Image: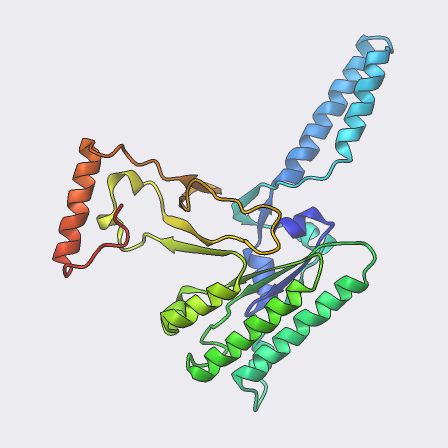
Length: 299
């Protein structure tokens, strides 16, 4: 999303029905509209200053500072999740769309061939990025890896997906200015063994897990009822990293407020307080009644 809105980066989206995904799923960008509004207000204020005061040295420096700020790039963007991105913004920096289902529908194509075609397509984009003298960053987003739409979740699919991950990691390690975000959905994680999912996580530089509380809200403490899910940092870059950042928390709360999706720290009560004792007792009772196992959502 930020790569499309920035205008100085190339974006490639790999997803089933990639064209519809780009047109329907990318949210509305608000930062540019806010910046344009602030620019208009600044111009209005500047015109009022011209009319009310004479030209001074301080005013000249203020004008230079204003023009200098307008040339700075924006690294943070704000999005409205309730609306789609404007077609004009998509047309200005149209993402490259790659649909793996185009190869699946071909007769005689197995799941291994599908991942081979996908790797070749990404490799061509990386080569184009190397030949480009503009120094633009290429952001590749891969959605739907391991999906049943690509093939049955059997040993052949696992071998093909593992080989694709290995080749993709090697390609990114020797390429500058290319980053990739690969998403494995819940259907893929449930279909494949846990050991295989751990192998894919081991090959990745960063691993984030997003889980929702749907269907399990009765087991949660009262302090977590305002959240719709949790975001867990399972792995952070250690190799080829300038600094090994160690965050204070590795698990955050995710909640939706109107048009925004917020990620916040969990604010749990102090140990020994009444609310924490009640929540822990409720969670322990719920876990015992469900079979005596340990509730993974209990704190």
